[in-house]
Length: 203
Image (cartoon, rainbow, N blue to C red):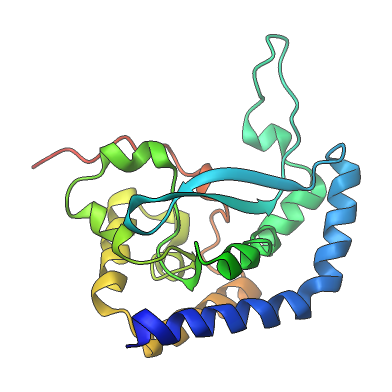
């Protein structure tokens, strides 16, 4: 019952309240990022949602679009702006995903939504992470985040799939707050900073 009805109600109300509470901060960041990123405060990217459906995720844009002499984008660490780095360190770049939650293609808690190009690279066990709605934070994020391997992340994602409950969601929520405030285990706040997932070799 919780997974099918109450979780969606809780997500919608939490996202709505969250947007109201952070609206002044969000507007300030949008203005600053609009100036520093030549009128582009948001970052849009297709991600994979529940049952393998594809949706567009929205985040605050933390990197500029500078390229080399051949027109190729520079490495991420060379393009991240000062305000963008601040947003990442404090996970503020994730705030616009509250609107993804209102639309219903994301949840507050769940496996992080990854790139659609990874879909054919998952094995059957790893695909199970798409049995639930993806989230802003999840069991893998509070147990190592990007400091652990893809395979470990997927195992943690599947643990969440198999044990999803209101109690587990609350545990993840408060652990996320603790890690954001204390900045523990923050190797990166951005999924795109992980090495590309090329698939897991069969044993």
